[in-house]
Length: 500
Image (cartoon, rainbow, N blue to C red; front, side):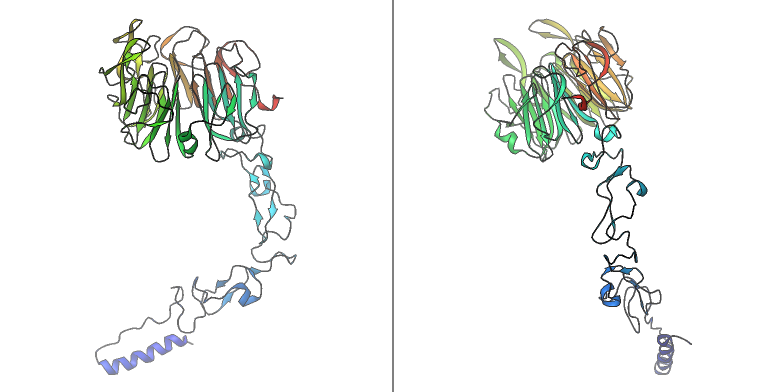
């Protein structure tokens, strides 16, 4: 028997033939699956005419569906959670009946049954997802990539590092050889050191500042209020930061214009860098600062001696301690670099990485810290002529560079998860088991490196497996390996679980 709707259509068509005497225009009629309830249809696809599991079957939970012919409902997935019987698409009733997180493919954790009779996996954890669920039993021993070290900041003679799920630790000058928990479990998400101060933001966006491992609340109002800080740069006597809106701010000494506000006056509070917006990376050196704008250009300001501003020209004259030095109180564009994504500044030189995986350096080159194997320029400083690069040069032999750090007189870079350093090496800060300076990159014996930070005489790097290694000078325990002996190659920082 033909469906009632189709039978009616033929009747209607016959009427139309007589009336129009020229043909028959088809009426589509009800079509199951188009989401529109027509004719005798009681539902259509996801259109349930307002019906629910409760109204159709008396069971309040589950999924009510429309039958394939749109003439009835399918309530097989409807169920009543809490009646002690597994029904419909229920996973559990009250408890998990022995099913564990591991049974569902997770590495560990605690599986529970939710109020709607489905598995609650929020307390199950997986390794290598970048989240340390310490409260759910995920530990550094079983998953170091999640619960190990993930960031480090290296100061003049001390070091601070971050462990996921645990907090911040510092060691070295004023602390001792072992890492000590900082601020009663304050969970920092970023950290950076200058020569004497450390800055960090916690998981609530609050900014902290401390010296030699002793945390204090920041005393700069603008910094304390800028809760959405996206980047830090800490120099010897000043620091800079960027806010979520891309604006750059600096605070501290300004005798060379290193704050970038167009003056050489040292303000009481942080000042906005003149003429820069959409800043994506920022760095502070000894008496200069640099930044990368969103269009991939690099800008520098402050003292310009030894070519550290990278624009190949001279600027204003500033009186610093009775000496006349070249300075630019407002940002100037670094020559020849496009597509930059990060910048890092050492004492008297800077380097930028690009989206193409290159690294370019400029400034003082008295120890080979520029990394191109030669020095073609000569710059005059108060103490005499020095080797330098007044405009950027690309460091040869390195491709796939993802991160770099400029120390006082040396530089390190991560490329393809490998690590190279170059420049001054009197204390073994290059990590190549030598004390000879290197004007070209040399390999550091570490594999799968995530991040490196260079400072004055020691260096630290985090691996992708959550380990942290340091090398160089260690007379105050800044390497964190439980000794005071210098090391010319990487040594692992003592496990935080060994700290009393």
